[in-house]
Length: 381
Ligand SMILES: Cc1cc2nc3c(=O)[nH]c(=O)nc-3n(C[C@H](O)[C@H](O)[C@H](O)COP(=O)(O)OP(=O)(O)OC[C@H]3O[C@@H](n4cnc5c(N)ncnc54)[C@H](O)[C@@H]3O)c2cc1C
Image (cartoon, rainbow, N blue to C red; front, side):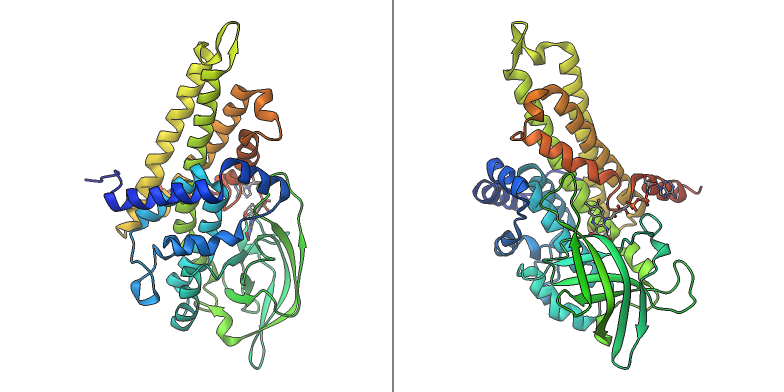
């Protein structure tokens, strides 16, 4: 039987997450950071001190040998209390840590997993290109062998955290003449390598997730920069998606519950026509629909975390949890805005920030159309 109730130990960890959020990212501080486009990178070592970044890693690298369900519960709670820290934790663990654990070399793991656990290493994924978004197999960035390693040339776009990351995980075509999925490889490129140029992209939301256009102008890296098997980049990317999609789904569910709670509180307090607006049936039903969507999304992400923790095949459920959670977040923030009306549209409102941020996730991290295609394929279509 699957038991979704947190253990005593997990409850203690979640209590510490609540204290962390209240101290470092209360709602007004998140509003300030969002308005100032000031990501809370300085909190990575704080999360490290709490042990949050050590949770999924083996003890031999300094990790806590934790259960993936604990990671998902923490992500959900961070999504509720401190969305921008939840997003940061997902980036720290996903593109870097779980990628290294899944297909990095032993030398890369020994060097970098302890740095991630200590909150000293951040990774940015440089996958998307101007002509290769959903169609990642269309990647045109080239990797050519040199006497000592590799030379990378091309252009990447929408690379989050690129200006702060210690390493860019660059996906490039290493086999000459290879087509589509064949011949893609992944490279760990230190951010300060000569030949890397970055330009920040202005955008409508997720102001604490800075995004960059990247030029790779003959960037030279050593042979040890290769991550995983040469030519297996496409497969390697697929192997780690379940972790990043689990983290994203969990954080999205937390943020969605936050939007429901904000809307519910407002519906109880705001009076029109001599009564709280929550007493109008249309508002009550809207809130009921919002809570039902969040509860369904929560079951889906917890089930995914259970599949991962128990080493079961999680491919289809990773896609499902991502679709359900991100569409739930969009649904509840959209309806939350309707319930708060002008109070939600005001710049100081937490709802408008959640609503703007939510819009990204039905196409970011693999669009929901592509997720549905993956689900249909897993169903034999
Ligand atoms: C804020 C932000 C942060 C990002 N961070 C990163 C990052 O850190 N690293 C990184 O590499 N990328 C990042 N991305 C890129 C993101 O992953 C892409 O936006 C996403 O993969 C979609 O690609 P696209 O925007 O080019 O859309 P397109 O692929 O051009 O898609 C446009 C539309 O067509 C649909 N579509 C495309 N192909 C199909 C198909 N076969 N069937 C049905 N529908 C289809 C899509 O679902 C979408 O609705 C980020 C993007 C944003 C906006």
